[in-house]
Length: 77
Image 1 (spheres, rainbow, N blue to C red):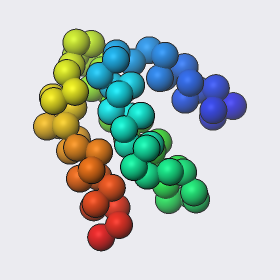
Image 2 (image 1 turned 60 degrees about the vertical axis):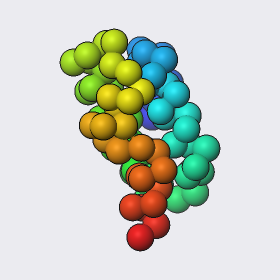
Image 3 (image 1 turned 90 degrees about the horizontal axis):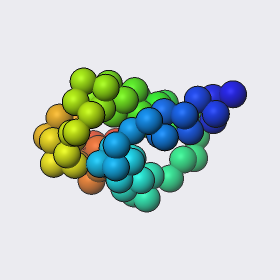
Image 4 (image 1 turned 45 degrees about the vertical axis):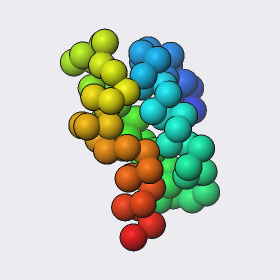
């Protein structure tokens, strides 16, 4: 059920949001509960940003959330 909701959210996002999410997944694979919660939080934030600004760019996402590399770095610290 959750997977279906996640796929539905991804389909509604613009290409910049999809690229951001994909880049993050490449850097931090899903392994446990903490990673799943992190991805859920990021997905909610991406959805929120995409809803408020459907034309948001990848650079704007990085400015609002942080780069995928920064998120992974903070996660492991």
